[in-house]
Length: 178
Image (tube, rainbow, N blue to C red; front, side, top):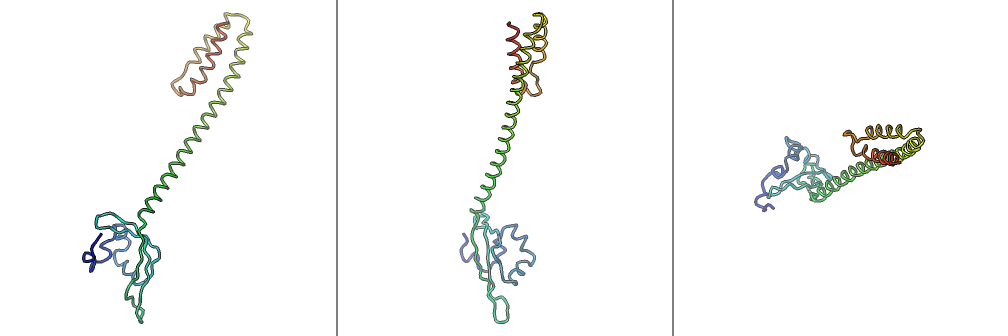
């Protein structure tokens, strides 16, 4: 950090970070000193290395008999690491929430696929029974051919449609082989 001779005689604002300078510039620092009280105010200071230190400052004015501020008793605590850890924790919670929402969407999608497959299975069972009951083999094969053409996977949602179509085609193939 700074040596004593580098600090003595300079204004405190010379060591403040840009945001703190904006909030305390233009005479506002003098108003704070005249008021004489600060309690856990966040500030940013720049170390000699250029690193920005986040601190919490508390201060009490020492006044003379007329009430004028003679000195300001200041205590500051470096909270840079704590704030960094809080930001990382907040980011981890946000990522966790994002992943949880994605997982719930995937679970819901899988549940819809499962319900759809169950429906497809019942329709396939009905279709197989109907085809077996068809009066002529030629009609049965003609219907199977039409259904195979209809059941070809589409490019709109190949992952979803393929699962349905595989089930339908397998039933149709079983019926066709009879």
